Length: 45
Length: 535
Figure 1 (tube, each protein chain N blue to C red):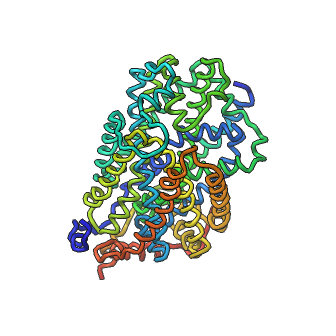
Figure 2 (spheres, rainbow over the protein chains, first blue to last red):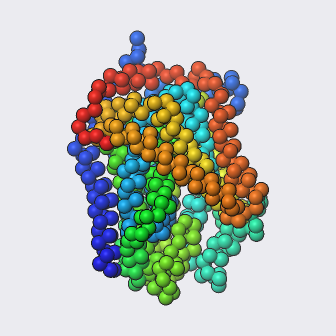
Figure 3 (cartoon, rainbow over the protein chains, first blue to last red):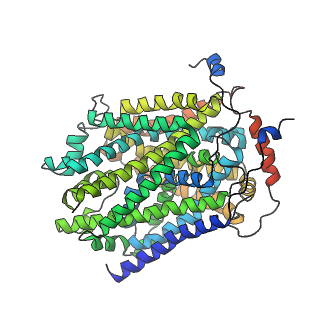
């Protein structure tokens, strides 16, 4: 492969796969909150 | 089954709406939907044709400025109004219901031909082992059209069936119907939990094998070498926006439907980023695998990569068989490649069908099993009548081209204009997104969805109308494109209007005590002002 193609391959990998890694890291830092309500009961009155 | 009394007498839906049991399963299913045939056979060629490595720039701009913002819009509508596309739009505003039915009908058209391509790919897994195409002296292209599809001369409609396509299509429909009947968690989520890891592992092995083929480096050079002049061409930017738009499966009901099954306190934007980047990550991998293999093909025939590069059906069913026949361990490459197409296709087909199933489930107020069977069996029958024939390829080609442009694209444009400028619903939806989301949306998001997205979609649509009016699509007869292209696309709009005029019965989900409770809870969650990172 030419140097230019390698550079662009690395940039593409860093931005796209890096973007996936960052977004997954962001999710893991915000764990799913517990669901606390039953909406039917909420509206029972 | 169509009398009002039998509607009321249908097996009633349970009071509680189904939900994905975890965030992970939602993300897996949403990625399964977004990663489809287009990621494997469309993206590599689009990127190569539009600047190679330089395409990364418009591509990233399109993801951030249109793809992700539109994905958030779908999530917001589906999650806030917790319904299938027609019901969610109706709850947003009664007049918007028709957009939802339009999306349902678009999904119907896509579903009937998508199953055919999955069936072809399944057959090609088998052909990769026995190399059936080697028996045709004129090559894999002649084998595909002549021996396999037995394509009739000239576009038309024939009812001459090809058993080699009918049988695998029947199998595809049986598997899909079983998954759909099982429901959101036991069917859709479970299928994605099995197929997606399998797809990723198979595809990774394929890519690793491809990059070690002789000539692979030349293929990757062709794919990654940037052509910066391409960036001055508006067509390249339109290609990037168009690709992202179709690739993420935004704005045709799927993401509205899937997000309606998310729990109340979901981090919608955090999940959206992950889905969008996972979709692109797979595409990049596909670009590497496909161009490494094309590099081998060029090396093998002493041609330039540009001469063998192709996309779509030509890449999968003509170029890849040639590679399979000549490469070391070619059968393995074939099974992995066509197997990946099958799994990527199945997980997308499931999501497309779910748009229709959910809509009828809400409208009829029936339980999962009854509503699924009432929807999927007729869809499967229509698909099996029209596509395993000697004219299936023509029909597929025209329907695909027209439903993409004058279905998906047109419906997307109408929906962003109606939701944004028409109903002024974006601030309300932004508030909904911001309740539990790790990335907050603000003015930027409203400008992108309300301004940039309609401008980009409108530009693409006008371009497409001009192209389709200036020449007969694929050189088919005018009557053929007129009925199955223009006529079909027009009929979707008329059908949507008619469906939106049918009143919702008392047993339907339009009056749903669970939703009323949900809505109150959601409104309590809303935070008065945005804080933290803003989109």
